[in-house]
Amino acid sequence: MKFKKAASAITAGILLTLSLPVAAGCGGNKLADQMFGFGGDYYKSVESRHSLNYDEMLYDDFTEGVNLDRWVISDSVWDQWSTDQNGVRPQNLFLVDDENNPETHLLLRANGSYYNMDNDPLYTEEEKAEYGDGKNLFTASQGYGVNSGACISTIEALGPGRYDVKMKACPRVGALTSMWVYSWFTLNDGSTQQNEIDIEIGLEPDFSKVFFTTWTSPSNNTNTPTDVDYFVNDGNWHIYSFDWVTDVAVPYVDYFIDGVKVLTIDVNVPTTNATLNLGLWCPSWAGGGLVNNDEGGVSADSRMFDYDYAEISWWRYIPFQMEGWEQRPVQNRNYADGYKPKTLTSLPVINKCSNGDFERADETYVKPDTNYSLGTPWKDMTIYDTESNSYVAGSSAGIVKDPLNADNSCAAVTNGGVFGQWLRGASYGFKYKLTGKFRTTDGAEAVFRYLNVLGYSTSSYISGRNDFTLGSSNDWKDFSIEFTVTDEDALSIQYRLINKTLQGTCYFDDLVITYLGN
Image 1 (cartoon, rainbow, N blue to C red):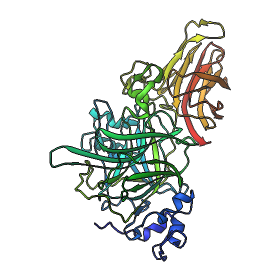
Image 2 (image 1 turned 90 degrees about the vertical axis):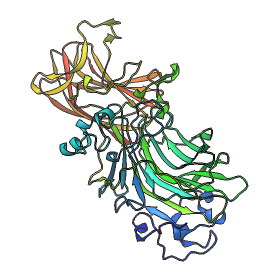
Image 3 (image 1 turned 90 degrees about the horizontal axis):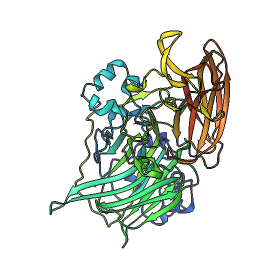
Image 4 (image 1 turned 30 degrees about the vertical axis):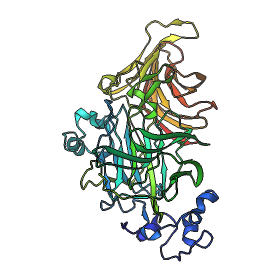
């Protein structure tokens, strides 16, 4: 079997060139020094353990687009398991050519439970009409892309070797970012064989772990959650890798993060070729599928966001010249034949605040079936005044028409009303910027408040109250504040719009929360 040779485009993403001499052994290979010049000694010394076939290496940084001779763009729903996830859609894949973000070349978008195509800024009205009429499975019955993701797969089935991807994982609970090899085929006895090796981020609501999986049939799999020393949704670039080894009595997979070995799995390791997948999707069991971990509640409302992205810089595969594996015909999943993704000239700025312009009334949202009353992105959290230990008469919070402009919608918090929202996966040290505008009437004073949540569950313990007083103003007034998650045990935040004086009305509009890093 011959793989397509890596071309001169290799030099666009990493420092290597195939014109360099290739000598056997770890110390004498200049090419290997350039390719593996990071991480730990074990990662770097791969040539001391295995023979690498550089001639048939595959590398792609997607700066020339998605090569449809090498990749298919998936258009499929798999493992639905009677849930409302809507698979992977070609419209959620984007190329990026942004000189201010030179390392980001490919975006995989996850649409959460609050997504609606009508509010998608990346498509024109004509494109929305096309995708909404059933031509590309972005139909009304599919929720206009709600709970969907994106995936590309190699056309060729690959074998043992070193696999690397440089990426930023999608930071949202309920979205699963993964690099995996996968094959399934029918045996002579009519049974179906499934093989898989995975690196998965977001499989459970715990961004301090990466999940590594080997799978050799529907009943034989090993899934190992592994602690890492950072939050994998930190917005930083990381290189995720595995070495798939078959020429030994017990085949095994070595897993790496940033060139440091974190795990070896030597059970249920495949020994047949498989296609490579780079994907992001929203199965209801991603993020654990749990809204209330303590009570065991399962709900699609684990996807409490409009949309967000995984970013990819480059991907690489170097075959190992070894035996112990077999080649079989492998079926690709359904894909969009000839689809070419849009190219973005600037990396989208993600608003971590869902429906921050309040232009969508709650009833227009797809509301997941949930027992926890969080089917909408804004919730009247409480009208109970803890300071006076009583309810405040006439309190309310909701989306209304702006009294100063009937064409505009905004949030209104009257008397002791509180309007709130969750940002799950906001961990200690994460920094954010909030911008927006407010105005007040009848002695009201506007306040933005956030609380540290010590978990991902909606029933997790809340620690600390951090208030930013915005003030009072009869006219709309712009504001901008920066805030940081301050509790070392925090894993999420709940933020609220409140009225400090418990009288009159505070109006809020055009809220944007952006992540600044950590």
